[in-house]
Length: 465
Image: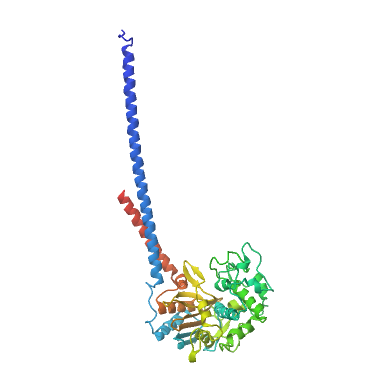
């Protein structure tokens, strides 16, 4: 049966179903779209919350690191070795450290306002005293720097001239960097871009010492980790990198400018004016030379060096005390520097030339340990060499206080005592002390705090979800 329009009942029903189905599908699509938009919005909120949690945790980690670093620098978990100003008490603490940690020998001198206040000498073998000669390793560099700066004062060396201007016997090998940017100033401050990593072990008795030129070309007595080649491997003036090869180059510089052997030039420029009568870079008086000990307390080999300027100085507590006292005003109006260097040049040597983590660490031939609270720094130099030689000399130019420690039989004891003296004097812990003696503790505290921050931050994030 057909209706008026000619469609059968089946056709009409099919069309109605199609319309209903289309409407259902459209409604479903709209609903799914709304759901997808809600899911997208929820996902976006969750991602923003997660990003916020991560940022919050990162900020807390930065703050925590700053707190731990600042606390370590200020010695929050360190005990003072003695009451402030109690020099005798500090020496008792140092004596106890020697008794507990060393089977060798030691000389300690404490200065108060430029004068000797306390001394201590001890040995497990032949006795030592103020005239005993110690090999002082890298402390040699501080005295070498005085010789170089004396030539600067005499206008025979320009601090900012390429060192190559003065050299005829040896030259830096070609490199991708500018060798003319290797200046005397940068060599003194370990910022010349040299990548030798030296570190000299020295030569055993009976071995023939190489020439300075041979050591510069390829040192054969390198300590582990050094390539032994004095060359420019980084852009000069951009970063601090300790270089024994740089001071070997300064040794050659002194010889070229003075036309004398290095030891003779240093006697004339530094030792004689300061009355350091026993000090030498070669051939020490065997009657006064101390025994060498390893860390186990056994007698050790006495190594000799071709790298005189970097590692070979022999000196006594008496002579080094004269050198330290020469940094301060003396009796009868004697000026700092005692005529070897002017007071202005001493100030120049103490100005920051190199930085680590934004902290000043080096002047011209001097370590800058910590600020002294008077616009300058506690300055000096440490020495360490195989098998167990360790030395330190540190002064506060503002007060005239200082410490000297010469020892064998322990590879770190002198530096430990010097670091504690620095903290005792200023209330600030030196970067070298933090790295050598406190790093494990700092890392444990940092890691513990970082773990707590991360766990707490993500627990808070889950609760927000």
